[in-house]
Image (cartoon, rainbow, N blue to C red; front, side, top):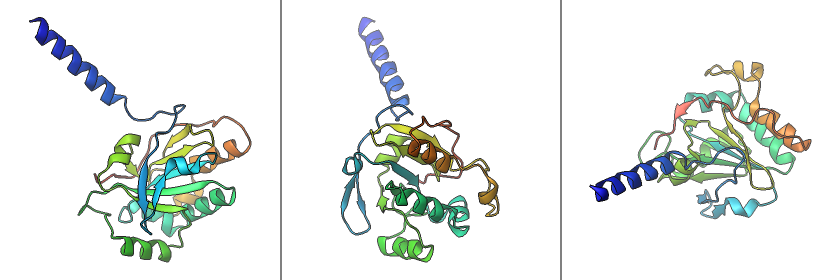
Length: 200
């Protein structure tokens, strides 16, 4: 009986630990290493001392298309990188799932849309997506120069696929980046992400 109770207690502890394993705002952002379109390994730790934006991405998602066809995402990318931030697109689609483009195909898509991210990274086994509990495309994360997660959630305040809404919405990413640049705490540091489900 005692052994059974001990096993049950251990199991419940493990379940509790796994339920809280994802990084939270105010915590150190966990390191990861993924490969970019040129076959180069990129680690979060490579960008120590810089603000880093993580954008969960799926080129077939209507919400992603909204922000790229309107030019909204590229505008954000250029504004961030011009301030010396790093912008990493991460695709956690499993092999064969929606949005799992080959490197050649996704490079063509990004070129056609004039994307301006620092790098595009494939996460086909979903390890990094699960590490960060990325739920939607887009799901945005911002890490400050000290390596702390300071924002996670939606790109903006209007949950729609209408391109015209991008200009009307309150953009949480640009607001957070402005707070970081000004040396202020991020005022809105967590929101509910919206978009297509990540295709793990």
